[in-house]
Length: 425
Image (cartoon, rainbow, N blue to C red; front, side):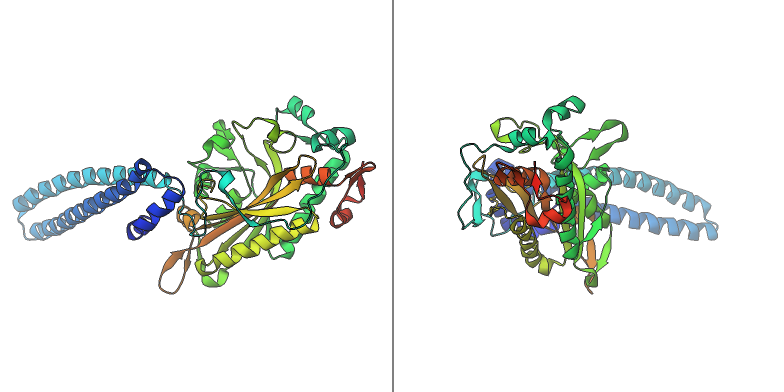
């Protein structure tokens, strides 16, 4: 979340950024409400400090009077101290209520977009940052979409998933399961070769963890909640992996911190219907390798470019056509300052499929996480970044469709040492 001092010192910039996110005049009233509550907090704190100072001085005077044998005077002052104690309790209650109200409002304000974020109201306004400059693959009229290929070659079974769990939970079988495992191993090997430490995190997190990276209170409707245990199934490895550094103070020499993790991801995807979400295009459980970096603020945007290059190299290795989009203000995630989406081309569906988002959150997450570093003058908030490298469901869809032949699905050469076979049939 944003720091109140940042909002106060950069009010016009904050308002400009929120307008880029399509905040209306009514929406923007929250900024004045935040500053008013913060002014109230400061006023209450000043009164409380003065009251406590008076109480402490009188308490000291009581001891001196008692030593001098002036018990009646001491008792009179003791009663006054008791009254001040009651006043202090009331003021502390007001302070607590003010703090809760301020925190609630701050949670409602999204991150301020980077100046390079284009204006726009929806995904149709996203900017093509890097286009695919080669010929897109074309398939014969007999080419099949991946859901039909899965049935033909017994790669995964959506109907069986419905039987076992419900819609949106695919079951991978045989060579399809091995193909999935090969992709996971390949992506993890590439990440660790790039200097990322591999993490196997829990698949469920508590409320503090979900709040730390911004899933709460913004995205609770998209998360699976285990009510009896008050835990959430993770929507991405970003959540537990980034929270490793919650309440941590780093040294500048610790940067960059590079972490990667493979996990299943669970998303309710409420309200997602239509032909565009058939097969693996949108599911409730999918596998994903996440890369996370914690970086010095002066270097985080260079790091973002490095992460883009890493994801691009994976897609190049898989020989998948892809493009990169810079998300507009209206499509930008709540916690992100700048996000790039990678989309691969699905030849059978003749459409682009999102397979990765790479984002810089600047200090938005670290302020919630209380993730700081020492810079010689005190402590400052670090910058956090993360990206999908990669999400498997749509990668599998594109690989199946783009590499289909009459004999079967051709496995990319880079994956063949992992699969142990060249053809999926």
